[in-house]
Length: 127
Image (cartoon, rainbow, N blue to C red):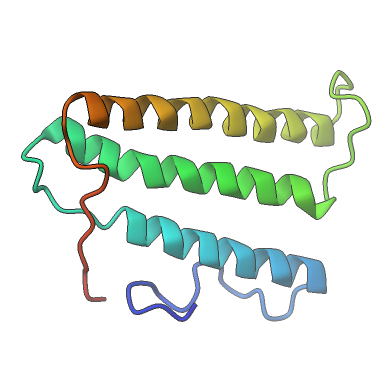
């Protein structure tokens, strides 16, 4: 950021946050901007299915990136994912997002290819 296709911020009121939270919110801002750009798509494929996948792939990629970023912050303390703690529950959710949504991204990319739809259908929307 800044990026002409995104607002300046997606996370509000982070200026007074701790250094770690402020850095993480900046990271979220950038990821959300990338998702917003990716989800700014046309309909040149002429297909409801293609439009759905062109929207969902960047949406899923953002979820995967957010989950990876969360795990890398060190904010989740979980030595054993079998522990029934909030941190271990959140760590499990983050890893499930990474695994499941990456699989779904691969499936959607495969469907786009199999149906001879373009891999992307990007366009520019002025904000």
